[in-house]
Length: 280
Ligand SMILES: [Zn+2]
Ligand SMILES: [Zn+2]
Image (cartoon, rainbow, N blue to C red; front, side):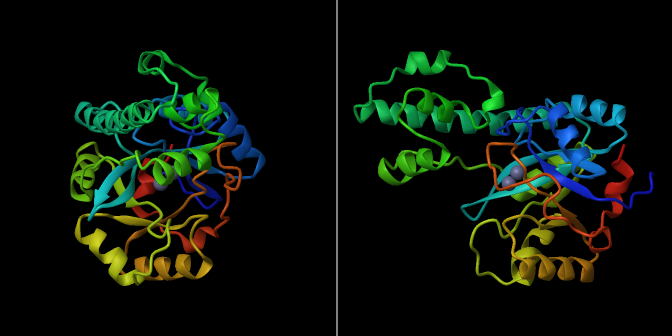
């Protein structure tokens, strides 16, 4: 176990999911910002983890392997961070592959929906379409931008969800299933940004239901959390001896308001506990 007392960011996306930056760029920005420990947590994707770990090693930056797994709880989309998983674990890889397929299927169905509504698009062309992953986002978004149907990501959701009502989010595995697979792959499940969207549920009620399902920690500090909510979450976790993490949820230039190293949280407010075992 390495002692760690520096600045950390345990929630970063690369171009392996919907971020714009490569691991090289992420590491160089992290160094520039004085961040000493990072975790790469792409959505249901681990293909950049090994590369990022190696680049961190070369740059004397501490690294924690990670992934952000899509889950559904009582109809709500929930994200669970899996830290320290064995990325070679076959069952785990199959699990996240199914999540990725669900996301791809949702987008294909949305394109079909647009065609049915008279948009001049071709499903065949969409299936063959590829894009430079450093643009960020995902296939359907980039395709619709290139075909001038959407201007940007906000326009994408506006058009597909609000105007056309054709973007149906898939039902992902339950938090229990995610907890189980993360632990099977030797990792630690941590609930990501519990107050990402507006939620009036009290901290105790909101967090305890996930702890009952096996969650071992909470990302208390996230750009979408107010200072008050962050502190309340951290206090509750401290009382219940849970892991406390912080993350910027940076997507590179795809979401310009989220920057690596922000929120800047004093290490004394975190509780990395067992996660320290996995830091390289
Ligand atoms: Zn998330
Ligand atoms: Zn994220």
